[in-house]
Length: 168
Length: 428
Ligand code: FES
Ligand SMILES: [Fe+2]
Image 1 (cartoon, rainbow over the protein chains, first blue to last red):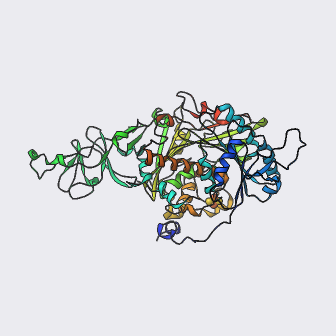
Image 2 (cartoon, rainbow over the protein chains, first blue to last red):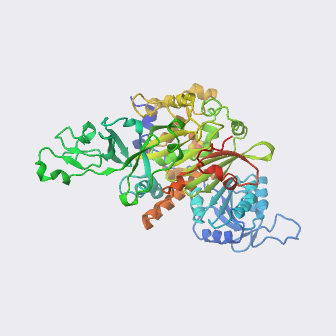
Image 3 (cartoon, chains in turn cyan, blue):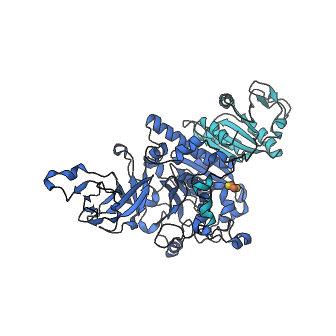
């Protein structure tokens, strides 16, 4: 007689897999940390996504001498200021996009907020092969303390594939 | 999640498919050398990329890999007589050389030259490092021979095994780069398996079961780094190599041999899992070889006379619920290899990737699919050779290293990630 496992793993049995959704939409925030990444995020945002929002840290970074505040670090792609803590409060995942060689000091602010709110983070660095190792290292060092998953991709098209894979 | 069309592009590897064309760019392990031990030995049936083939070693020791079936009336040449420089069909005596060229049709006058008109499809078969390799792509695109280090070291430093896995190659390969399963599925084996235990670094694994991952594109595929805390603020890094399409190398432990796999499609529902173990600078000890033969580490015990694992789906993988309950094994299945294979086979012949819910820690898998799909597209649209064909991409090593916190592993461990002949692998 055929064993349970042999029968269950057959192609014929695969037809009887329950065809019902096994997850609910997740909330993902994709945040550009620098200028070139903002352009990438803007391109991404033109596709249709589920419960995913695209943000940038750039437009609204407060002047260096202003007193520190969690406000005013984040903006949507139209340039409207967003409140960081409110934005990430109910997120399932925050994806920080950086370009190797760019200054990404806002990573620590966002990372700190995510770790406070216990939100999963992924750091994604896009790097051209021509970018010197030292510059990539600097970007990685800035992201590393805050990203529970760090990805170094050679081209931006990975980001769309990754978001799709994560059901964004 | 992956769309059905994308999954099909990678999982289907028969003739005429996109995924099949990808695999037909590479030298692939086809048989163990020991399967054709001497001249004129019995031929061996080989199915690869959904093609039924027959391998034989002729009277002069030349190797051939040809269409399994006689061009006359289609009987399997597995029944053939391997003698006098060729393989003779037992039905009506047609004879073929190792290139598949028919060299005798007894019913026809020799002078007619009729046999010149008959030729079976054949592929090159070459021996390297105890493995017979084949290349199934167009002849004008044949790449240089494979340069993997395990196949280059002296034979006493290397051990190779293969087993049938009853699932599509992709879900098996994805298991090889699925770094986050190790802390669960294999947690019982670190301290007990003779091919792992005793390494100093095992304590980092056991103390810190939630590593942080870094996935970095490499020229031939991917580096997958798993970072754990070590002493005095340093990090313990385990860096896995994945080279396209389906080579993986697992980070070493202590002075144990280093190991890894190839996953090679037999057809769309089955694949060969090849498992190598080698040490770059010393012979394997008799104890190590005995353990490997006994199915320890990443190897398996077999059903006698076959390459089918002794624990297989027909005996429910000999699952031991008492061992599972007692925590001796996490899944109840014994041995690392069958812990992986049992679960990958349980997904069904080709897992339905439209139903999966991947998370951030699956970025290694997501990136591997992304690179495979990108390469298939470049191959189909621009006839561009994929990564991993170039032998430079094959001269890689996995590594286990301790690094200061501000150093990215790709920089700090640069030397450790490539083959340096005569130097041991970087391991803690
Ligand atoms: S927990 Fe990963 S497959 Fe079930
Ligand atoms: Fe495993």
